[in-house]
Image (cartoon, rainbow, N blue to C red):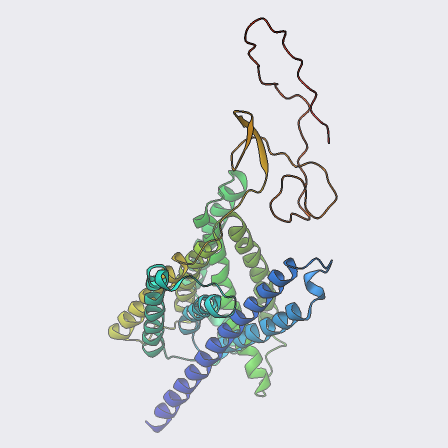
Amino acid sequence: MDNSQAQQGDSYTDNLIGTLLAIFGSVIVSISLSIQKYSHVKLAGTKAQRTFYNTKTWWSGFVFICIGEGANFVSYAFAPIAVVAPLNAVSVLTSSILGFLFLREKSKAKDFAKNHGLAFLGYILVIGGMYLFVSFGPNSHEKLQAENIVKHLVGWPVLLYLLLEIIAFCLLLYFYKQHNANYLVIILLLVALLGSVSVITVKAVSGMLLLTFEGSMQLNYPIFSVMFVCMVASVVFQARFLSQACNLHDPSLAACVNYIFSTFFAVVAGAVFYLEFQNEDVLHICMFLLGSALCFLGVFLVTKYRKKAKIFEPYVTMDMANGVPTIHDNGLVVQPDFNGSFSYGALVNNDGVAAATLPVNLEQPTVTVRGTDAPHSQPDLKKD
């Protein structure tokens, strides 16, 4: 009885350590990304010909990223996947708050409540949801020795889960590559399927490293090398697909959908591979699901009402309305080849933007002549 109570106390301690590490890592990563964004914005506002990796601000953000991701990596060795994975909502929450404070994404006082009221409701839902799934999340732990990981890997539930995941991934990849199905859902499903493999391998590698530091050598087992290679490969391809999703679609929407998909598949992977919910009762599982649902809704509200940048077309077009060229139309864009910082027809600095050439054959507008006056010849267009 005393031994079981001691093990339960150690389990709660490990959960607390893993939770705090995951929260700390998510906050540090959000701060580092905001620092790097500030570095890019500040560099774009100057005329100095410098690249971003030559600035101290960007490198300081990179160092913070390494620290934050290191804390997230270690957190998987202490807490279950079902507790650590949903805590990525802390990163979304922190990024949104830093958008108001650090990056000065502000609005007028009279419009603040109207534009950001639901976002603050999302903050409350995220915090409440995190409290629920951390408090009622799984509390079962096992020493992730190499023999235990191999035993989990060769079990039929894991093999069936991996088979279904491979089939789903191949089908999605086929439609994405062969049929150009660049839908946000398809790309982020690919990210989530890779993410489920990532969390399984990350937990295995971090757990074996922790046992190695405690004195039980695990690095000489072949399963460690297999898990390490799968971890690196899945993380690299996951980052690649996520980058494509952010380039093709709204980054705020991509962040919301990615959090929901990745959390769902990560929790399922932890439940199947590491049997994290095996000893949990129905009440704890229901409260965990409620907390996760509140986090999903909160992240949706936070990302949905973020201010989107307005696209501005700073060029004069060739559409003629009573002889006057129009702006912000879908006509031919004129941007003569000029080497100065500001080009003719541009309202903002467009250094680095490729100039569009003027078509050679332009249809001349017809001119009606009144009376018997001879028609005047059309003057030649001045060539740039």
